[in-house]
Structures are given as structure tokens and as C-alpha cells.
Length: 545
Image (cartoon, rainbow, N blue to C red; front, side, top):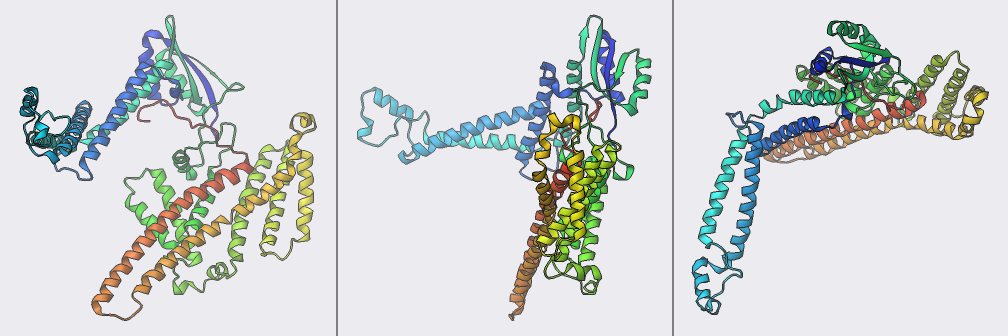
């Protein structure tokens, strides 16, 4: 569900402004619009954070992938000073190298003596070639200076590489807290002897806020959101599906405050999409092994999600008998394997269209239940019927069904009437009547949405075929006759091809999940459900955000 919000106006004594903010931050229940603050104190705190991040980047660049045995704790300011010194001396060395390259064709000579002779009226260029203009120093002196600069640069880079980057990274949470506190301080306005700030509070946290207000002698006003106000969205799915909050945060999406929490169907269908798009049980086993190996380092939500997705992929591998692009002989006789292995791919496409129809019909039926007993619920149930008819049409188009059954037309006509009559109320015809004119396009769009689910089959099949081709390339190397040494070398090449090929295929499978599994949930399903993902996530003012 999406937790209801209360608008909060909090008042305190102006002298207790910072203490109030500190207590409010400890409470960790109030969302403040910190992004709106951009004053000098906020800018200074952000500047410190940017410098710390830059310092870590400079340290990692100086190390070039090699971590020294002994590290030195160097302040951020000194790290930046060392980097500035390196950049300055590198520029000097570059200019000196160019000057040396210009003068090298003329050999080593004393520029001072050359200038003296010119001043005495001697035409030195009549007896030898000299660069124009003359350098400040001789070639040997410039080379010595360049060598000294390079040594100083190397010494500074070595010291920079020994800087303890982890000590700087450990300061990041504190720097983030400083930015947030400075922003909250700017948002808290003063009026004479009082200060006040506004924010959003979940209904579930009202009692905690009241208790804190009594202890701290605050004044407050709590009210429901007014028209035009856009509260943040706090999604609280059922316990089993709460890890989806991590996925939403990772994708940077949130439903609008007035929309629905779709965490449950999102997780169920996303798991199925993940399995079908990856399409290989062995890849799922690799994902699961990696997840278990990273158990202590992964946040619990991500550990649960990756375990579910990996397990679903292994299950799909069992149902389709696909393991590294090959099959296990004892699974070949399973009914599911035989059914999915239809040479015409009709069964696989039927499965994809069925999944798509169920996904979209769920959205429409859910809308209908939520809108009941309002008359517009009839239109939503009608749309579910239209989706069912388009499912029949899609299967007929690709030759899965020989023809659309008669009952399908009955469902379509009844559903079309329901949508046409109940989508817009008579009192809304002047303002929303144009929506009825878009009905034919919306019906065709529903057909396109169902067809879109065939990507589950196409992308999954592509992954399997790529794996099969790499397998064929690898095994083809050792198929012929040859000497023992030749076979040994070819065996090494075979292993390399298999490792590189399947690693590339796994990477492409992960990318396909990010593109297609996310799309089917956030676009096709969400369009039918009416979820625009235009909200912004509830982010309470607290330490360690």
C-alpha cells in the first residue's frame, strides 16, 4: 500500500532552531524538501563533499590498480594540494619536453654565450645553425631539469598512492549529513522569536511526532494534503514483497502519491520475466552462487531479490532443459520440455501471449475492483474483456489458433459496449468526450501491448542460440585429429572460447532484463493499471541517509 501522508507545520523557539533540527533528524520521520535549499552553507558543505570525492578519484588514479602495503592518513586538503602540485609540475615537464625536442637538432650549446656574441655584433648563424628564438638554458641543463621534475612528480604520485582512501570514504556519510543539516537549517524560517519549518509525515508516525513535540515544547499543525500539493510516496508492500522497495530505489522510480502500490505483481512477474529472458538454468545457478557468496556484503533486500530471481531462472532451466545452451538427457522426456520444444515455436509464443494477457487483465480487473461501486468500474471490466479478445486475435494472427472462437466475439462486443457507455459519465461528456474518439486507437494499442510480450520468447531464444553457437565453436576445435600438443593447445582455446562466450552472453542477458523486464512492468502493465511513476520517494530527514 501507499502510506497516507500528513502535511506538517512545526514551530519552535528561534533560539532552539539547531537543537530542534537535531531532534527532528533523530526522529527520522519527517520528509523535508532539502533539494530546494541552495544557500552558502549548503554550497560550502557540498563543496567539501565534492573535494572528498575528487580526492578519492586522484588517489585511485595514482595507484593505477595497485594498492600499497602501507597506507598513510592524509587530509583531503593535502591530497588536493599534492594533486595540484603534480598537475603543475606535469605541465612544466610537458613544456620543457617540447623545448628540448625543438632544440635537440642543434646540439648542446650555451645560450648565454650565444646571446653575448650576438650583442657584440657577431653573426653566429653564419657559422652554425641555432634555434630561433634561443632557449633560456642549454640542452644538458634542460634535460637535468626535466629529470628532476619527473623525479618530483613520481615522488608526489607515490605519496598520493599511499593515501588512505578508505579513511576519506568513511567521512562520506558525515559529509552527507552536513549537507542535509545545512539544507534543513536554510528551510527553517524565522519570524521574530519563533522559527518554523514545513514537511511531510506518514500517518503511521503521527504519534511519535506528537510525543517528541510534547517533550521538546514544539507547536505543530497536521493536516491532509491540500488540492495541488504533491506529497512524497512511501510504499509499504506486504512483508514478503518489501525487498521490491530496493528495486524501485535502484531504478529511481516511484508511483505518484494518488496511484497504486504495484509491488506484489511487479515482483511476481519480474521474477518470471527475469527467468525467461536469461533463459538458462546454469546462468541462474551462477547468479545464485554469486549472490550466496556476497551474502554478507549485499543489503538484505537485494540478497532476497537476487535469490528469488536466480532461483526462478534455475526453475526455468529445469522446465525448458536449458543449461549452458545444451540439454540434460534425463530431462529431455519431461512434458514441459517436450511442450516448449515445439519446432514451430507456437507453444512458446502461446505462453508469452498468455502471460501478457494475464498481466494486462490483472491491471484492468484491479482497477475495476478499486473503482467499484462507481459506474466507471464497468468500463475497466470491459477493458479486461477487450484484452482477452486481443489475446485471441494475436494467437490467430501468428497461426497458434486456427480462428477466433465465436464466444470471443461475444466477449468483445459486450466489453466494447461497457467501455463506450461507462468510461465517461454523462456529466463529463463536455470535458472528456474526446476520449471516446480515441477508443479505436486504444483498442489497437492493447493488441500491440500483448504482442510486445513476445520479446520474452525472442530474447530468451537469442540467448540460447548464442550459447549454442559458442558451444559449437568450442567443440569444433577439438573434433579433428592431431598431435597431443595440438589437442592440448586447442583444448585451452576451447575453454577460453567457452568462458568468454558464456560471460558475454550472461552480460547481455543481464542487460536484456534491465531493458525488457523493466519495460513490461513499468510501461505495458503500468499503462493499463494507471501508474505513471511520476512520484518522488519519501526520504525522511535523518542521519546516514
